[in-house]
Length: 93
Image (cartoon, rainbow, N blue to C red; front, side, top):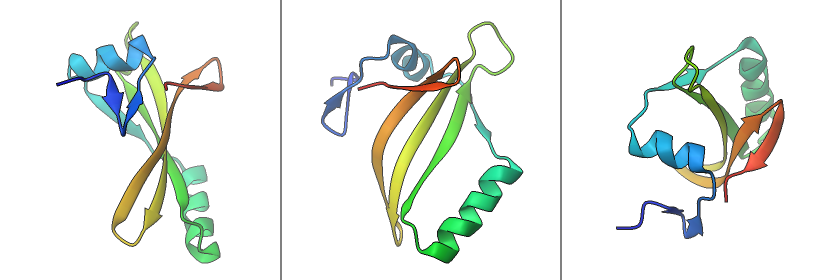
């Protein structure tokens, strides 16, 4: 089994691969801003969304990733994963 591939794309981020392999505990960040966006997307009928997940929160090994998804009813399709580095998104593929 090749753990470097997700949805047919090779993951280039060493950090994310380490977090997955080590079974790091993810912390899902949810804020009032996200709640507002969620409401807006629902009202506007937008199918695109995402969530920020922080691994090893509060340690020197902390790493943040943004999972970008498209939702159609109960079907959720992963569109991309981005590592958040210095406030910028960097694709892991």
